[in-house]
Each structure stands twice: as structure tokens, then as C-alpha cells.
Length: 451
Image (cartoon, rainbow, N blue to C red; front, side, top):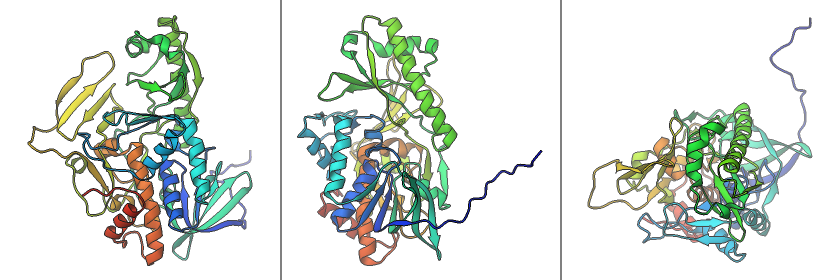
């Protein structure tokens, strides 16, 4: 029998360079799009790479059609604006947004399909060179410097040269393959597969979340947390009721997660058909990609901690601001734990009374928002022309549970795009960039920079 080996040798090849740009952004979530758009508006030649068929990430592909309030925790002060607000304003013109800014759960609810198209328009308007259905393959390091990336798409294998790179892949794929130090939380927050249903209004008066809790075991539905809401301008309801525990940073884990998420959606549908047959809800759509809360993080110059977030720690290099509560979707028990900046703590699960307490004693004065420092986006020990944006930035378990929501991560994308412009303009590395100049440039482009 012929002996087999654990590796296959690839032939040496000459890969065509299809682009030479100032900035290459990997990952086309809103975080990645906003990095590309801000940089293009400052005059950079930008290429944007996305492995799926549309831009927007969790907001579009995963059908999570909620962004959180731009106000502080007591709803008195606006703490961010920028491209998140610009995109919402564009969607409002198409009657594709419902707004409730004085809510800790929903600031804006939007139509994800409308957002897909609007992001295309923003990219075209700014002249960003975009590639969909294009997978990142490997980095190219020449003479000790990251100079290019290899990608694969319908045209084959190609190379793109750039002077600065932003890793907005969510899983930190570029940094991981460059050998950056990464880590995964001991208790990683599980993923959720959303789904859209018609006929949900016929469940009015029925405790559907209670039905899922009561009968979930019969349908092998893991105990978790269910929520949802109407899609603006339609009679369709978006449900987020699944809980998927696979590690989505591996090929095997992501495959199993996608299939398990869809199985749970069907199980919920079957449960409702049995225990609320009068509703006749109809499954209308499934996500193109499961909604991932957490995979690997990249070790950066600063790890944002839960203590810093909950204490409202100020940073001289702050580039993003948020008020969304700490929101821990547990991997080892049902339900969610919320922690607020005013010291309250709530544990909630469907069908049970709230368990209310405090994570710290009451104080006379409380912070009303938190900050994300630029240092948490600069990978340790890597080339000076790489930045991280999105959910893989350096944050511990508690901090990540608050900052991971889209309106916060969108701001890290904007900061990365502006930082790339300044790095090239001044001829400095990311770590050498003056944060005061970065904050000033962000503000000039429409971002808010509270003290």
C-alpha cells in the first residue's frame, strides 16, 4: 500500500497583483466598510475584501437588525455619531428604521436588506475598490515587512499590495496567520442563528418565550434566551432564540455551528406548530451566516478590562464610546447577566422572575458611558502597519460583553480608517501615532469625542 503523508506540496506559482493601494481592509462588516469609507474620504486608495456576498456582517448577513442607543446610560448626552448615524439617516429616507433612543435594548431597529444596498451605495460613492466572494488566503511578508495579501475568488488566486492593513475579519484571521498572539475566553459567549417569520402577529397574547422554555427540552433546544422584533416596513418578525456553543474560529466548529443553528430554528418552529397551532407562523428567511459573539482575540498594546468599562475609565487615546450594558450570554447556564454602570446587576431567563442585585455598592456619582482606547487595536509584536478593528480587539470577558455590540465596533472601524491615513501622512507606525491628532481628525470627520 502506498504510504500517505500529512501534507500536500503546492507547486511554486507566480501570483498576479491585481491592486496596489494605500489601505487594504479585510472583512466587510459595517466595521470594515466604515474603515474603508473614512479612509477613502481622506484621500486614500482603498480595497475592501469580503468573503460573503454582501457587506454589513452581523447587521445584514446574520439578520441582527438592532443597533443600540447613541445616548449615555441615563439618556441625557449623545456619545457617538459618525458613520453609524449617517447610515441610519440614509435608511430613514427609505422608511427602513424604527427609533427608540431611550431604551437599553433597542436604539434603532432597521431593515437589514435595505442596509445591504445602502452599504453598496456608500462604497461606490467613495470609490472604494471592493471584492465580494473573495477569501483571504495568506499574508505576504517581504524583507521583514507585511507588503501584501493573497486572496482567492472566481478569478483565481490574486495578490493585493498595500501600505497599511486593517484586520476587520471578526476572528482576527490576518493577525492570526501573521503569528500574532491570540487568546480565546475560557467561557466564550455562544453564537445565535436568527430567523425571520411571517404570521408572528397571530401569536399575540401567547407567551411564546415561555413555550420555548417549557417545551424546549422535548425539541432539543438548549436553554438560553429568546428575543426579537418586527422588521421595519414589513409584517415579518426577526427571532433570535437559538444558542450555539461550537467554536466558530475553526472550519469544523463553524460548519457545525451553522447546521446546529438551523436545526434549532426548525425545532422552535416545530414547537410553535405543536403548542401554538393557531398561529400558523411561517419561516421566511435564514441568515447567510450565524451571528457570532466571540471567537479569538488579538493581544494588543492594551487589554480593555471589565473594571475599566464598568468604571467608565477615561483614556487619552479614546476612539470609541458606548453605554450598552455588560451583556453576558452564558455558556454554562441559561439566560443572560446584565451589569450596568450604576452598579445594578440583573440575571434574566425566560419564564422566571428577574434576579436583581448589585455588582458593587451604590455610589453618589456613576459613570454614564465607557471608552475604548486606540491601544486595544494595535497588535503586540507585529508589523507597524497592521490595525485590528471589530470584536477581536483586546478585551477581557466582562469588557467584551459590553463593547462587542455593533455601534461600538463600528467606531473602531472608523478609527482604523482615519489612523491609516495619518500613519501614511506622517510616516509613522500605529504605535507612534499621536492619539490627540487621531481624535481631532476623527472629530473633523463627524465622530464625537467626549472627554
